[in-house]
Amino acid sequence: MIRTVLLAGRAGLHLRAASRIAVAAALLPAAVTVRTLDRPAVPADSVLALLSLGALCGTELILEAHGAGAAEALDSLADLFATDLDVAGA
Image (tube, rainbow, N blue to C red; front, top):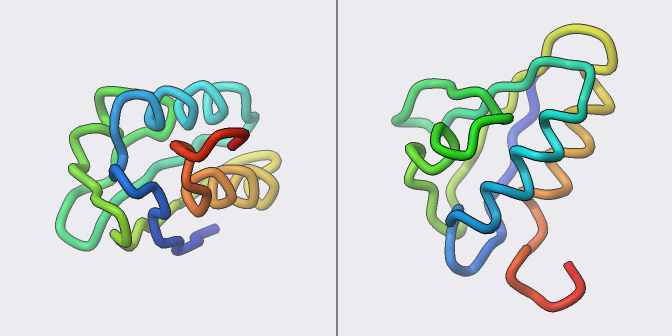
């Protein structure tokens, strides 16, 4: 399954946001990768791999999930990427 989402974080995909997303991805039963239009797919559960995307606010991210719970995994991670994780309470 594939889902496209725009990165909402005003500061882009920085260390704190990547850490939250990687932890969430590691807890999911499905294997999820993330790529941009100009960068190859990386595992969503790796902080360093996510940072290597160099994604800025508004970057289109392509999420792909395989295995049990793929749809739910995409929903969960797409919600995180579409949320500005730098806003208090996010």
